[in-house]
Length: 278
Image (cartoon, rainbow, N blue to C red):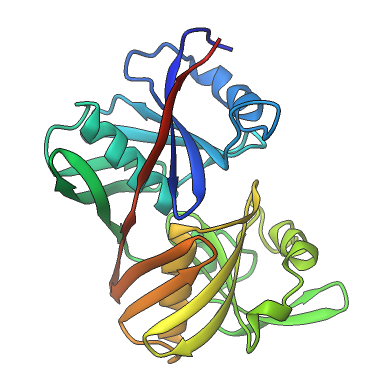
């Protein structure tokens, strides 16, 4: 552990992160996964759903790296990028209210809504969802739209896509009855997904509103997932269940998602406290 390292504890709809400025390269890349394992432990350390680092970039104002509590690195995170955007703006790493963020899923553009120098919400251009199995990745050929997926003795109708990271979306009539803790990890580790997968169970309230529960790859159930919200809206639109503008209700609150070839997501980012490692 790096003693004296300063951090912010942040969350987006309860999806919480430890955010660190690593533009000075204090933390070497080979240590990041292990650092995430240590810091993200609840009750034994700071505790979080993930570790976010603001790093230097040659192609954008900043580069975001995100590590799950199990030490694995994620390509993209919707709630995480909103938190990182607020962190960078309020710490002077990014000077403007619109800027680019480099991620493992490509360059993402953010637009900040500020009041007296503080960021209240962030709108993110999440890019174009990819339904081809190779892009997810998922074994097989072509797209996986409303297809059967066998999980032990159960059959689920799934729609799979990439929103910078892999998602498996399942629509249900009653979200409360889904045994997420039981089926989530089985789908996450299903042989069809060589890099594992995030799982969303979705209940349609109306064409303009849905409810979502998320099982995140490398984390477990979380109170919110920005990319999961986007994936749910894209899948719903493809299946004719939702319109282009959708309110997505998650356990931690709501996000606004707009889908018209590209996905746009808007929601809050909150600083909980600042701290220093000892």
